[in-house]
Every structure is written in C-alpha cells, then in structure tokens.
Image (tube, rainbow, N blue to C red):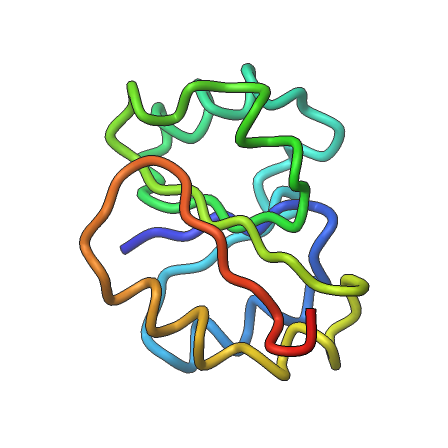
Amino acid sequence: MKLLLDESLPVKLKHRFIEKGYETFTTRDMKWLGTKNGDLLSLMLQSNFTTFITIDNNVAFQQNFNNYPMRVIVLVAHDNTYETIMQFFETIIKKLSETFTGVQVVMHPDY
C-alpha cells in the first residue's frame, strides 16, 4: 500500500507509517506542495498511490473520490500537531487495514 500524507500533516508522521510497513510519502517528498486537489488526484493516480491521508475536512466535498480506485482518510481532530495525531494513530492504522474506496473519516476520540 502506497500512502500520501497531505501537506497539512506533520512530516514526522511519515516515519510512524513506515515503521508499520507502509510505503509512505509526503506531498513535500513528491514536490507537490501547494498542488490543488484535482491536480493532486491526477498525480497520485499516475504515481500509483492507493491512499491519501489528510486533515482537510473539505477535501471530500471538492472531489468525487468514489470514481477513482483510491482511498481517502480524513482525520478529524482539534489540531494537526504530531502529538494529537499520535493519540489516535492506532485507529488510523486499523482503518488502513479495512477494504474500502472513497472517503472514510477517522475522528480523534475526544472530538
């Protein structure tokens, strides 16, 4: 599984996914910082990404990801700090093990 982490997520989160066995890149790694979601989707498909992880709640409304063979995980939390995301990291990993396409939401337990 090849993951792309949105630019709004902490870069060091990448290493936690790699430790779990996921091939993981950030938009910075791919030199896609600032790329609009429609263009980002095309680039992801061309680069064989299977999953996009973001904290941008609007992404689900900006593109119809159900028409594409990829998954989007939208994280919902009070902020996007590494410490906050790590509080529900195992829930994110569990979601990655599920079979789905389109958009799925993973919420911080205190949200």
